[in-house]
Amino acid sequence: MKNQPHRFQVNLAGMIDILSNHLYDEKDVYIRELLQNATDAIRARKKIEPALNGQIHVSLTGQTGKKTLILEDNGIGLTEEEVHDFLATIANSSKGEKSFEGQDTNDFIGRFGIGLLSCFIVSNEIVMISTSQKTGATTEWRGKADGTYSVRKIETETRPSGTQVYLRLRNGLEEHPECENVEDLINTLKKYGSSLENNIIVEMNGLEENINSWTKQFSDKDTLFSLPKEEIIKYGEYILGTQFQDYFLIANESGRTFGIAYMITNILEMNALPKQTVFLNNVFVNSKINNVLPNWAFFAECVIWTNELQLVASRESFYENENLKTVNEQLGEALVGGIKTLTKSAFTELLTTHYLDFKAVASEDSTFLKLIYPYLPFQTLNGEENLADIIKGTNTIYYTFSVEEFRLLEDIARSSGITLINGGYTYETPILEKLNDLIDNIEFILIQSDEITKDLLPISLEEELIYNPVLAEINAIMEEFETDITIKHFGQKNLPITFIHSTSTQVKRELERAKEETSTVFSDILESIQKKQEPAPLAHLYLNLDNELINKLFNSDKSIDELSVIVKTFYIQSLILGNYPLKRKEMQLMNQNMLRILEML
Image (cartoon, rainbow, N blue to C red; front, side, top):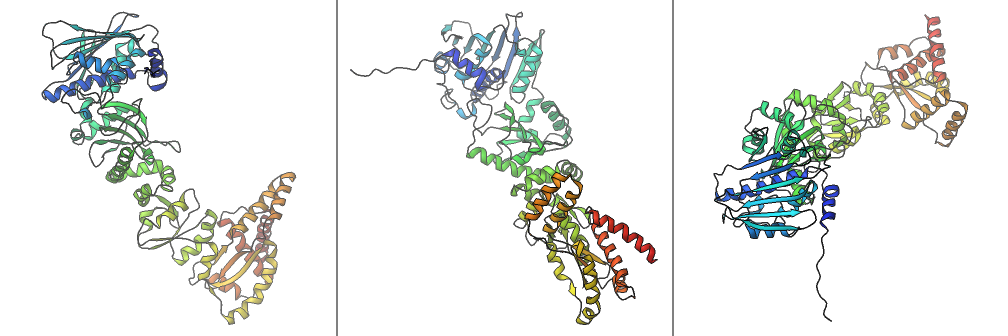
């Protein structure tokens, strides 16, 4: 027996549940669908009648519990055949298949079947009356939530082309204030239709209000780019509900995606994604889209218009495809150019607010780093400086891996005339590493504390004969502090001493100090950790024989005991200047030395 073909049965109630509770995030999305269908129809008619003044008229009539929402357009209308094609079979009217004869389907954004179906979210019965511009005939389509519908011709006298949709609103629509109050309806229409080129007119208390007469101008690229600053600032407050001080305009290479990037001057949470309010073909899509611009655009709240991206099924976000990737990259480049147009004060304020976020992104994103590196602040020997100022006049910049190493090296680096950056703060080192590949003719070198002492010159053989016996006795005294005292020629006279130690030595210091300040139990744990570590090398206190103080001290007639007191004072001074907390025995040494110095006076 030959198999007979069967058709799937569609449960309309189940589809309505999917639409209202799963597919759409916004409860009022049916308003968008109605506006899309009306806009498609008007655009189709304008292909034939370019001078047409497109209008969408909306009203809310009736008493509570028996209200009807009416939306009317003066578009091309539908023939009876089109009514069947577009409305009789659900999902048979995709964007590519929905074609008003002779029209370019790329101009159309709605899907009559799915779009009108969304109206069952608030209504058990939808009535559509449409008069075709092509035939002049009027057709009524009446659909019910149980899945039944009827189509009939209406014999009327001459009737203008267009379509009217009547939604008989059901009870229990507490989540839909736009179905009860005209003011809420107007706000919903403004949300979805503020950028539409056609006038949206709402009837309220016998009066008519054009709700997008001012806002629609911003959706035209040429108009937008010619508007004065105060208008664009005002628009940002209107559409985003926030006051802004600065912005710049952005567009991709085709010009089919463009917008306004408003600068955010309040501190954001780390890892905040960019906020983008996006309109596709001038119809609002979503205010939570975060993939049209690069992730590093968190410092801007943007309004974007596009007619070249493809919506997902819910039409509340865009497909992640090559087209979207290209738009994303090109808008990123436009943001780069836009930032460069900001005034110095505006950019300084932006950077001051977001500098840590900027560094976080720049440490991972080379494109963003290339844009922002001249303005990033770093701690140097001269305090905080922007990188653009740091690299002036030098092609070699050294940086340390830790804050401690910077403190160790800053004095000797300053005396040696090298440029040194503190790379110990969050994100600094990854950024400086990346910059080697981004900036021509500038080299960033990670320097270790023991490397910088290689430039210190050893004392002569004659000087060794004089000073080594003294140093040997002083070093014997300093053994308990695990520090070696060495005399060197620094090559300049200003710096008397420099204190250098390794990372492992610093770790050992911290463990010892923590052990002194904790309870017995925790102290035992720290001691156990310390025993497992490799022995740390000695710290080094270098004395500059070129310095007048050091030279005079070691060529004086002072005893070894007196010299050791002064050297110990140098040691304590180095720890304090390097912001190292003193251990217990070092605190005792400081007090004892002060008393000895008083005795020596």
